[in-house]
Image 1 (cartoon, helix red, strand yellow):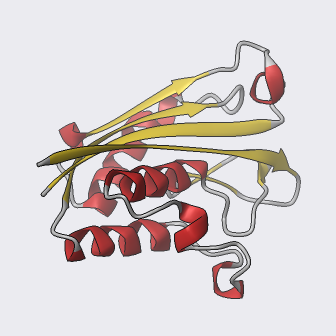
Image 2: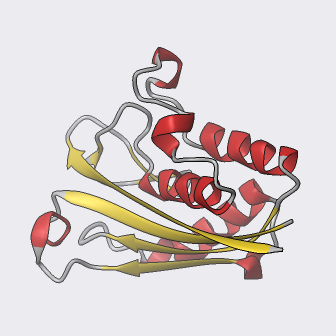
Length: 157
């Protein structure tokens, strides 16, 4: 049996924060603001996997009211969610990820991010897709005030 989940996340950009996307530290003068490391890619991925398995959302599973997640590396959420999927008899088949950012330009790092995500998820590189889109100067993303991400995940029982 196959199931599909969709995850989405958006965080504002701010000073004095590292920019972490897909588990990679990206050189940029501003980073994403959030309770954890604010990695929108890994947050959207976590939500997609949880949704596919009917396990709620990232806020339910890893609430920002819990001090143990303060400045947490978001790969913790991904690894724990993969474990929860396994307990329910599911395995991740593939993901498709779209990052929405006016800046920085992500074209040069998409392949590296794809490889990193594949390793984190124990998937073949061709089972992971990473795309980048700008905001076309529209809204908070287009004004380079925020970065967003949407992920679709396919799981199999």
